[in-house]
Length: 218
Image (cartoon, rainbow, N blue to C red; front, top):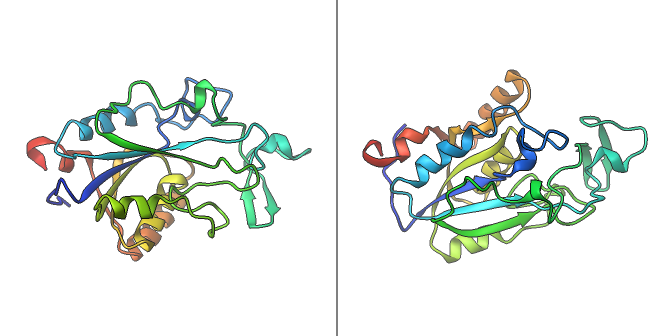
């Protein structure tokens, strides 16, 4: 699908473009193909999109979503925390470490805001809009409304976790929401990704590709 772009109303929302999710940091949380989405995102940014926002995982060194903080637990196992079931991850996105930085190859010329998420030690944060307790907001929706954004194109790392949760919350906040499918890394089995896509589409979220947002193809 090819949306017509509106410079004053559209924002590219880039989720967690950080080395911690790439082969650059093999001991953290590398996601297959994550490096490959950076040039795709840059191609979008070289087109008519006028503004971008970036989210950034920024975890406490002893964050409770880390398997290392739960003796006997391994990454991808789960624990029950006060806000519900939490998947446990390898240590990643630790604040002020090289892995938590924005990837240096990302073109930031159009980035007008960087939002750090997951900085509360006791709550994980997949979505750019709400933490995993589904109550604690990040302020992103209010900021986007303040700058006149009405439609969001979401890219980054990774489906069906941070990208899809961000898209779901964007739609719940009444932004017109699109996922730029080929500008997203993917983690997990195809059936989980397909189920997440079906859930998002049922909420009115649409899917598109980078070519539809770039240059003369937009």
